[in-house]
Length: 272
Image (cartoon, rainbow, N blue to C red; front, side):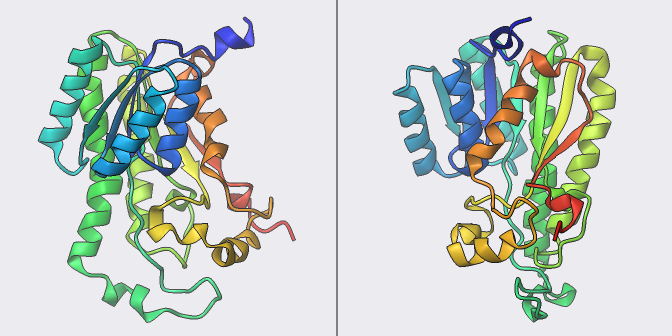
């Protein structure tokens, strides 16, 4: 099979949560470049409108709705409207996520009291779990209602390398939320395999996005982080595009329940 057939997503209907910026927008861009039909969800109405307008100008069809993954009823309704618009749903990227603030150790190695366990408020813990774990569940649940009857579909979740390793400089609620999302991927993959629905995860390392207040966009912070990454750089959102296209296409037909790191080798440890 030729590469253009293997990675063909033309006319596929692909929904992306957290689509207005960062990794979600980069995923939307590569799918648009390969002529998929897009469904964009994001809580940021202004950024969503801007992203939708820009992608529409490239000639692809875009259906955009403001949606908060914490509101399950509204999210289900948004999915229903998208399917009513296109008539089908092929692929979903459960990408929406938020940071958890700084951890109990700063990037320079000193203890940070604000990130200590006793400093974590109930609201902070609940918000991170609600978006990064419960929001993933809500997205998967909304999608499979439309996929199971067709006995086909692809679900891709944005987890993190923090799902499998401790990171002292990241707020503690982030780790269990992402670990739970990774295990949810495996459980959902097991259940849905019979219906020819694959469920996989992209596990980013340090990416320069808006998450965490966008601190990795700072050259100083990025330089500090890069010292712990074997490839010696922080990722640009476009670095995710090849893996996203793989998992959205028939090239990944027999891959399910996988969590694939995209971290410049950071999860391997320091090379020097």
